Image (cartoon, rainbow, N blue to C red; front, top):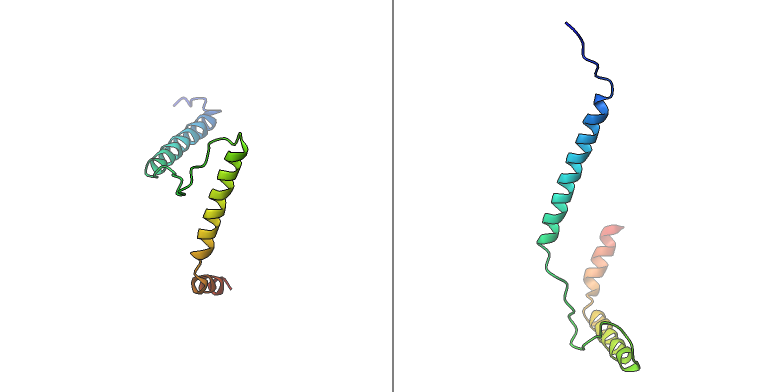
Length: 88
């Protein structure tokens, strides 16, 4: 029986395998991103897209100050302590 020359065929198989893995990874990424809601700004103060004037800067600063004060009041120290203790 005559043997076929198969030198280099493993390279083709590896390229096809990498291509299949890439397609599956891309499809998985697209599926995972399709279920996420769009990010929305949750503050009540309108923040401009670009800061061009002093008023825009003041509005943005006020919005950031409002957000940081809400973060500080929403902290639960017992939950934080429990999380830190679980890491130790």
